[in-house]
Image (cartoon, rainbow, N blue to C red; front, side):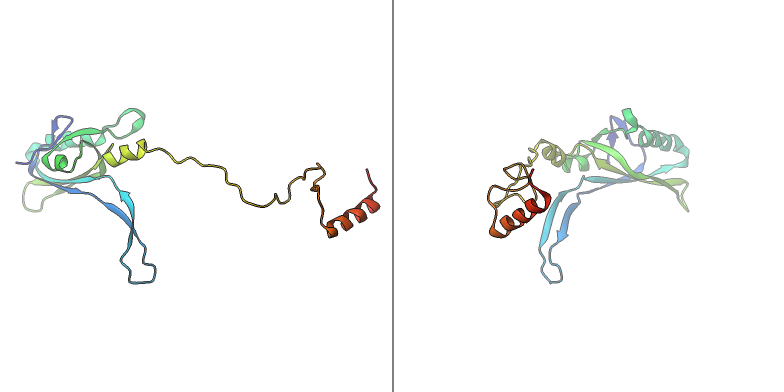
Length: 180
């Protein structure tokens, strides 16, 4: 018998089934070729998809589930639950939040609801490692050569040494504008 507890509260229903999923993000690096190389972009939070049936006579079970799904913490954030389940434990999941909604569909033949909802991992190990890793610091970069368009060493916007052409232009400028 499958058991699912959220903060010690049992999720009640019949035929409880849990599917765990770990999505691995990767980008195709092949471009227009038939190369199969992929660029690993990290692990996304693990998810649990839960399906179960609740008889109409046990409508309180569905109300309890909805209370859990709609619960919030400070700041209006979704409540994070400690999860107890064999599949979740095997996947290394300890804390979860409701994700992607809760659906309840009336069965066509039996007098019950078919329930499905998702739980996503919160505070996962990859997330903790990412937060702990040192952030790369940005260092100033400099190149070889001289500053372009900046004020020169003499304070007049010209450098100490002028090329022949620049010296000629300076003489013409000084003659036209007068020397200060």
